[in-house]
Length: 47
Image 1 (spheres, rainbow, N blue to C red):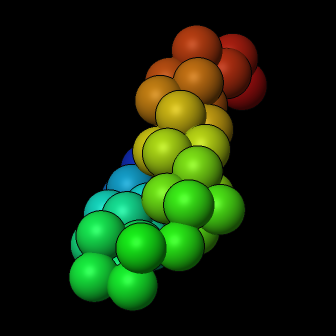
Image 2 (tube, rainbow, N blue to C red):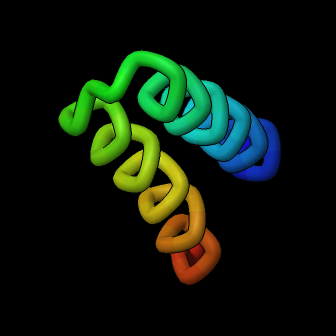
């Protein structure tokens, strides 16, 4: 379950970052970076 969530967050983060690059919206870029960061932090979550 956590793996699916992490993959989803990474994909959404990359999509947001790509959209931000095309539209020059700074806040969308930071949302994308934050989504990927949360996915990476979930790696350390203990069950």
